[in-house]
Image 1: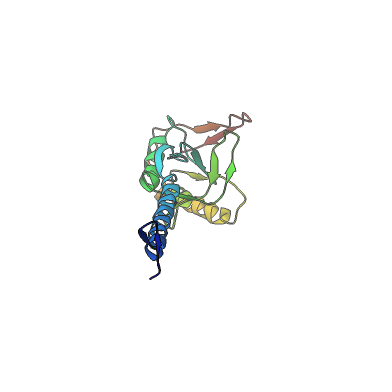
Image 2: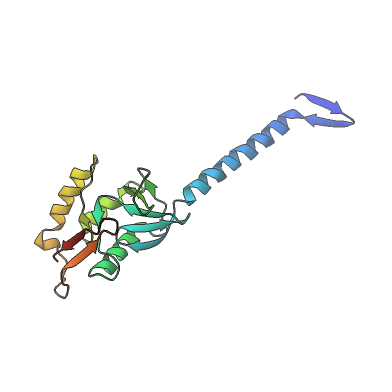
Length: 173
C-alpha cells in the first residue's frame, strides 16, 4: 500500500478508491431501481388504459375494451388489474395518441399483457400495423368462439365514440 503523509495525516489511497467505487456502484443501483420503479402501475382506468407511478397514462395498443360504465367494463378492468396492478411494466414503444396517452404493447415479466387481454375475451382485437398484429388478430378470433363468450344476456349493444373524429364503434355481445 502506498501511503502519503499530508500535514501529519496518512492517506491510504487504496481505501479511498475502494470507498468511492462502492458509493458509485450503490448509487448506480439506486438510479436503476428508481427508473424501474417509475414504471410501476398504480391504477387501472379501464380494460385498456392504466396509470404508472409518474402519473402518465398508458393505452394498450391493438385492442379495445369496454369503456367504464358500459357492459363488461368492470370485468375488463378487473382482468387488467390482475395482470398489471402494482407491478413493474415494460412498454415496447414510445408513441402517443391524440390525448397524449402513451401507446404500446405492455409486458409484465415476459408476459404480453395486450395479448392476454385479447385472449381473455374482455378486450377485442383492434387493428394496428405491427409485427404482433397477426398474433393479436388470431387470438381475437379464438376468443370469440362460443365456448369463450361471456354471459351477457342483460347487455345491449355496446359502443364507443372516438372523441377526435366522432366515429362510432358498435359491438354486439
